[in-house]
Length: 547
Image (cartoon, rainbow, N blue to C red; front, side, top):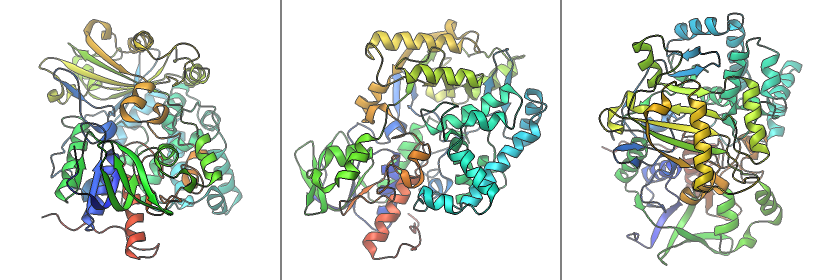
């Protein structure tokens, strides 16, 4: 596909969700914007796929972190996004055949907690209060330029504050939970939630930061009384009808309604510079497009080490830091076509069986289980007993599967990008998929009887199909070494690069990965401030009505 013009105010490299968000806000401010996407559909990991005839989904499972401000500004509901809201939202199967359920109603969740860990209910809510209080003391908004670790440490005013800082940033989640809880089940659940920081283990220094992301988001906006971010143990805020692809399609429609041009099935071969400034891009078609500003939704390593036509514009120290950043993706995707309802071992009635099938499941029944799964990964082996995060959206949304059939989408950890031996060929993927299915059978008793087809994605597939460096879906782990002013590395945390007019807008910059849209929003804000003569304390983008 060829662009309609040869000059734009802004060119965005990569049409993932952050690129679409950035394009929307720039266009809403009156800029002429081109988005260049190598795949046939925009949206990145949120782009719709047909895994098998009639079975539709995406690589991502849910929009649990999608920023409400962005959802509202882009009027995604107007562009067709509606939600199913199963209740419970999450089930956490236990090794003994029971399960814990996270409900939308706090009182129901508390009742389940009392069954799971009767001696730890108050301690659980104290942990929520700890992270909420700590987020307030940090005083960091996910919409602001991120402070350095030194600035964060300087904000700690008392010995208690300093102790909390050390525990979250330098301690590990296993020790954190051991000091506060007695129930191995509740420890396992909260440790699993903290693993959202990336390819980390319960013993990894800084792993508690995974539980800080929710309160940081909560403190950064206007939370309502029933805001789902107030609850730590929940699944999704809702399941978009038609799958996550409906989010990507609505974002594209919102951007195009503002005049954004999206050029699909076209790669950016290089970013063109003149002097110390980015002046445009060269496309895979051979066409050159000039622009006042270039934003890259790609991994910062790809952007600055592989695409620049003049690598000397990146200072040696920065290039060295970027080159040494570890990606080493650990996620694997398993998608199953089913001809029956998956039945959880813990279900005691037909009604409960359907409730549990409808919600997200997390499986990692002990902290030791998580540690051992990561140990396998660390030494180059797919986990013998992997951590699983799965969903069967067709239970509440029949449109994503043929009549009478179901689609199960499973995110799996850990699958090392570099294997100790062999390669991620068809045989290796099939073997690991069998391990995953054996593990699912521990809590879904009929899974092997209802599978009619399957497809898998390895870290190598993610790199080849989506351009994710070493298959890392977050563009780098979100530990203290890779967050705040360190994301992606000191000197690049505030969306600008050493090349004037070139900005970063993807998951590799603050506040990081998952489907929030905030990196795209923040990068657009920075571009508008820099190119309108406004000061750093300028207001955020004003979004006039599209109507």
